[in-house]
Amino acid sequence: MCLRACREEVGPDAARKFLGHTQWLVNYWLLQNGFSIGIGDTIADAATMEKINETISKAKNDVKELIKLAQEKQLEAEPGRTMMESFENRVNQVLNKARDDAGSSAQKSLSEKSRGFVENSYLRGLTPQEFFFHAMGGREGLIDTAVKTSETGYIQRRLVKAMEDIMVKYDGTVRNSLGDVIQFLYGEDGMDAVWIETQKLDSLKMKKSEFDKVYRYEIDDDN
Image (cartoon, rainbow, N blue to C red; front, side, top):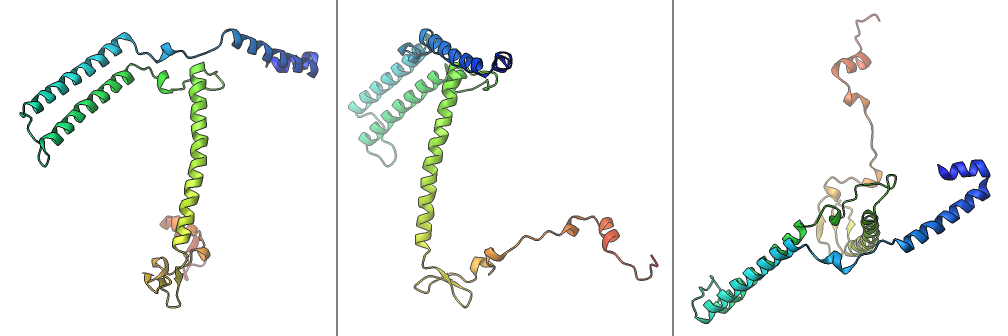
């Protein structure tokens, strides 16, 4: 709106200069008040760190208890495992649970903005965090498109290569180069999909009263 008013009031050259000077002004403001991410943004709050440390300490104590039981040969072997295999399996279970619990505690401490939630639009204006996540999502979409295009193309190439010797014989069966029967009838119905057309029948959707009104003919009816 401001640019339009500037163009109508003082002409296109002044509007062009205004747009260029505005860009210089924005660049200078960003230089003085830039948005950045520091190492402090990666550190969780005190309550979350305390909970994570408690989880890890408990896991360490549980592992020490398992080591003690194994050294004293009091650890009960699991079905189908030796005592050493049972020991390793139970230690892995304890450590994996501690890792999952610690990660869950860290995730619960994050806000919805930290998870990539974009509340505003381009019309309302994005915050710096929303702009970052929006750009990240757009780039991810471009990469997925490029990767999936090559993957599906390679899948199609392998399918064509695998079926290049399959043909429909004169008896209607589908066979390979060795004469093995793939299908007794092409497509299970013997129809070539290339020549199938869609036909629209309006009468199929009519009610009985509408159908009778349009198509019914009485011989004795003078009208």
